[in-house]
Image (cartoon, rainbow, N blue to C red; front, top):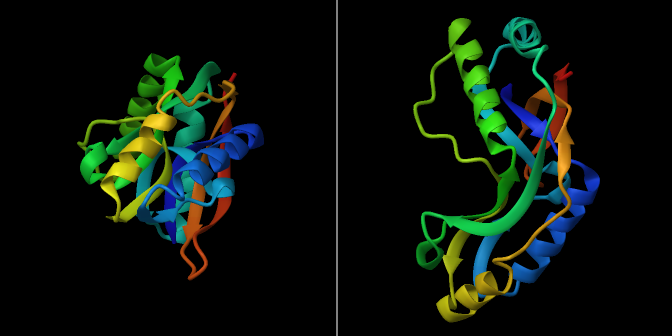
Length: 185
């Protein structure tokens, strides 16, 4: 099964992300838009994971991260990877207590390496993926659409838990199932 570790986001934020997607859907691009109900803040993608490994991962997260204090984040601003003119991914940035978020992600990474999983050496860039761009058909319309929502902002939320999640890929899109949860204090 494919798994990852993430922070679930509140429904009100998911609804706001859907509105941002709606504003970009007519912006001259062919894209695969993330289903808003499945958007989450990924901390670490684990990839293929055996059923037998899941309890070990969940236990390691609980032991190492269970004492972590809650903190506050806010989705704010829209960006792209690698850049707006040749965008491949469009996303909403995360503001607020990003220092604590980055520290949490580093702790997740260290914990997973500690139980023998592979380290991800890419720098962590916290974001909520709105969609993956397949082709920019109308560059001027696309850039104008991005400009129109660059100051996009949603209500903030408290991070109260991290989740171990299974991602089952289906023709209609990924289906997510929580396999474990660590509550923050």
